[in-house]
Length: 364
Image (cartoon, one colour):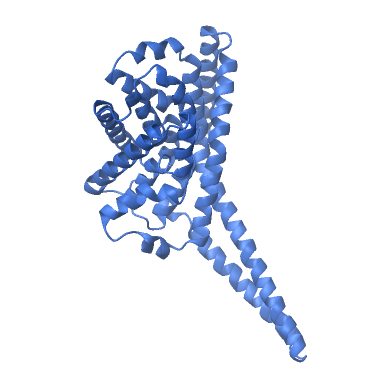
């Protein structure tokens, strides 16, 4: 087993070196462009992944399974709407939403709600709406169209999950994480209680003043133990999420940088003259660029003079929902067959919605 892992790691590094060599042969400045793009994607995404891991760990530490289940609407269609609007309460970037959604599903949130949150949350949140308005020179038309199409796609995808999802989409063994936390918490609490009791017994022969002092020391010790236990639990669970998903983020960032290195401006101009093909192209472009949803509008706005508004809308909606970087992170949490089928479903819904928006001239 050890030899197999060593050989696999060696092959991975050899493949990476081969890619860099190929890029250098095609373009002498390619390796520098690749490294700049790689670290740009990584530095953009990693803080949000850390934030998502911390929020996920806080949910595991402070939010009970019963509370999560009680927050779910009784109506299943209401649950789809709840997941679509959850980004208003937890406005994270797409990389940060995946560990949060995985944690919530483990704690009893129905899977379809968590998955709808993953695709809707990166667009249906106030930060992204504001950044889109600013990017398009204060005109809210594209921001509203983006919001409405994202909501429509999320509701349609969520309804499809209600009808056809039969298995838990999480990878096997996902439900075992968090058991150690409960045991550790009880053990720490018992230890703190015993310590406090011993302290009171030591000072028990005195009068009221000493008894009050002992009770205060017990409370302070218990408070410190609880705070220490909570911090330890958050750090532990956050590190587990970062370990699980960080390696996939590295792979996604490397693939994205490779695409950004070899893509030519002429390719954009060639695709801009077609109608439905421009939608497909910009959706693929958004998938490969893997931009953060809070900043992708600033990349899309300059393309408005080259592409139809409907194609720009497709870029702004599909990219935050399904991109190369996020897809690799999703594969760390969910089954591969589910991820592929769901990505294709979202692709078809966004394409149909953006073509319809252009046909009805919503953005003209």
